[in-house]
View 1 (cartoon, rainbow, N blue to C red):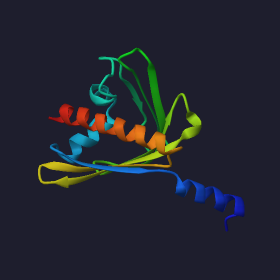
View 2 (cartoon, rainbow, N blue to C red):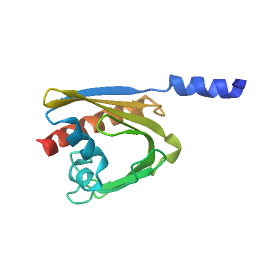
View 3 (cartoon, helix red, strand yellow):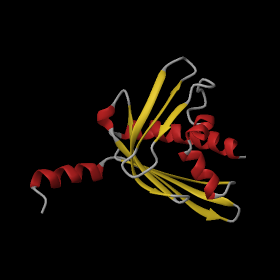
View 4 (cartoon, rainbow, N blue to C red):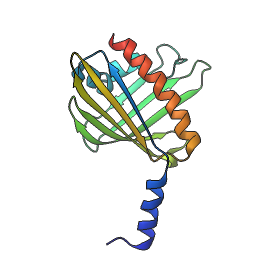
Length: 156
């Protein structure tokens, strides 16, 4: 049974902003999954449109409870790092993980990537939940859209 403070805390988490983005990618789920889980592949596509070439680094311990860290430099030389813990790992179908930028670790959110076969492609769904506020959600929506464009080019 939840205590009143826990129930209130859970209610606040449920009220936090979230976003769901969907896209069809012209690559089979196995290739899309590998692009998200292989550090060498992540380094080829991750980051915003203005990411400094060759600056993306990824460390991945792909298992439930394992950690990941991805870092890169923006075009202006600013350093970015995001890391978290894998909550679910279902090969070629689903990955769920926590998400926190190194500059605001207290603003941890949750990401779920789902992959469904669609002919010779993949229906890709990204659900990002428990944002700190609407501004963070909107900023991430723009960032994820840029990432999806880079992922599609990488997989083409």
